[in-house]
Length: 205
Image (cartoon, rainbow, N blue to C red; front, top):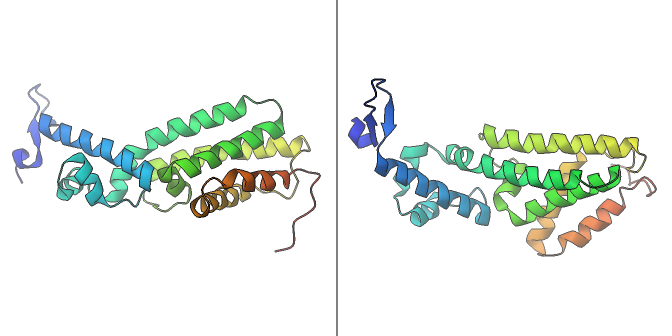
């Protein structure tokens, strides 16, 4: 395939490096914008045909520019996800007291899980071959681990709560939200109340 067919031209600055033609760059920008919108609205498994239609390009153009669904996800989703998660974590971290910070973190991430289908899918690891997005989620969960440790040390979070249990909460919230939109806050409040150190122990496995 020639450079012209691939949508690239040879740089004239003496480096010989390939650069995108202006029309090719525009198509990438339109695909990126459409993918962000639809992934957020419908999740990471949104049909690529829908993304192509909204971007005004052919489905083949998406594969030509990005190679695969996973590559498209990893190209467009991590930066936005990182910004949303960082903002949520910062707001939770500004609260007074270890329990309040832990509570705020769980509540904030749960809110994102119910309002951003792409983030919900990312946390659920529905697409493993997205290393950049996976790293963003791992960083957010690592911050949660710090808050769990602090809440344990303050004596406010029950000792038998594990960091791994955070994902169970988030996935449960997402499931409740899908089944009964708007009911997740009440369910989460009951869950968090049960995590206080003064609560009764859970049943055995």
